[in-house]
Structure formats: C-alpha cells, structure tokens
View 1: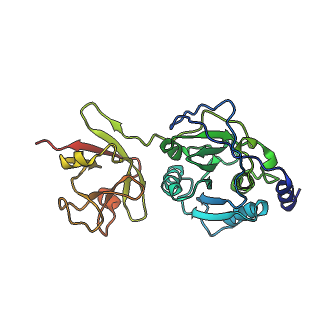
View 2: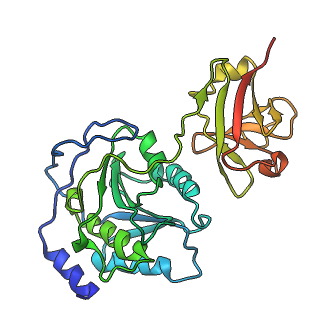
View 3: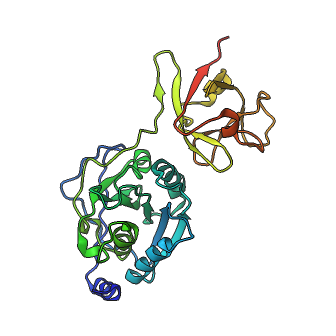
Length: 311
C-alpha cells in the first residue's frame, strides 16, 4: 500500500477523541488507570509536531521524516528543535527536550529520535504528560520530562496499522515514529496505538542527593556549546538563603563561591568561574567570554557539591 493511499484511508476514518490524563504520580514507575476518560471534542486537524534527532542535516533522514508526516497530515506544522544532538547521546537529547518543550503550546507532539537500539527489541513508546505528547524509543529519552511533570501515561506503540510499510530495521524515525505522530496529529486517540505500560526505561533521576552532613551532591547534566556546565541544582536545593549564608560549590576540585545574575555581572567574589541561574531553571557553572568546562576540565556526569562556609 502506498503512502498516499494510507494517508487517504486515515483521512477518511472516524477521528478518535483525545484521552484525558489521569492524576498519576509525577515520577516513574507509572501506574496506568483502568480506562482513561475521554474528552468531548477531538484535537484540531492543524497540529504542531516537533523533531529532535542526532541525524544532522547533511543526509536525507530529517526530510524523509517530514515527508512522511505531511503525507499523513498535510496541515501539520513541523518545527525542528535540533538535529545536532551528539550521535547516540540520549542524555543530551533528554536535557534538550526538557529545556525546549515548555515553550510549546498544549497539544504539541514531540518526536525525539536518538536511538542506538534501533532494530532491536527496545520498545517504541508514546508519552502523554504536561498537556503534550512525546513519541520515540523507550531508552530514557523522555524520563527527564516525565520526572518534572505531575501527569503522565506511557503507551507501548505496537499497532502496525499506523506504521509506514515496510518498516526498515535502521530507520524507525521515518517508518514508526513519524507516521505515528502524524496520525496522532489528525485526532486519533492515543489508546489506538497500544497499551499502557508501567516500566519505561529511565535515566538517573534529576533530583540531587542530600547527605547527612548537610552537603548536597549534584552533578553536571549538560555542557552547552559555550562551555557552560548545567547542573541539576534548582532553587529548591540551593536557595537564596543558603547563598546569602555562604553556600559554595565544589566542581572537579575547584571551589566556586561567586553567584551572579547575568554573565557580565560584577557582583560576588572575583573568581573566574561563577554560578548562574540559567534559562532552563538549573544552576550553571559559567565564565565570562570563556568556557567554564575547559577551565574546570569538566565532563557531564561529574559531581558538583554544595557546601556551607564555616563561620
């Protein structure tokens, strides 16, 4: 069956209604509700679909995914988040998606494909949380988003009726995730794609650890192209009161005591590297016009400790 005929057949079928999410736990594991309630009106045909991959732009991969989406739903609007995720770097993809998705409106469908396990037994999943949808491989790529949202349900995508045939063993972005997202954008109910699951693959939790001696053990979760080191510290773990009372950071053996409001801010101690609240809501280790990562010889995953200065 050609793509055009598949698109026509779907276009003529009765549209499913959007399922409302159940008030489930904000962190995995997720317990499915017996039968999710259904809203009274379908999603509009004009839907927003984002793409996030490690495919780059030199090859045909991204354009092929867009072609499949538009063959199913010509009215879809497709937005590129990025295609420059480092190859097979699931954690970088998880952070980038976490930082980007709050800027999109309710009902947006995010397709994220960084998929070292393509062709293997790893599952394809559809996540509904925060009023948005996420389609991609079950390898932890959506776990940061789900950890930060109060509502979630996860479905294993198994209904091959919505796949592009034949399905390549090396390009599920085109043959599974893109057509499923496109079908979802036409109003198909999420439950049509498969059953709910309770054991999706998870990355290490974002929440820092608190030790008995009062030290907070955080870590670097991302290093951007400017060399800023984004930690998993939020204002919940490092409060303004703590900073005022002498909190400081230790990263790769270096002590960071300065906290600033913006890059050229001259406030605080005159250290080269300083702490800065970034736009994604996490504390960053930064240096003005320099790479903090190079100065600290930092890598993703390295610990960042929060300690209190003794009076």
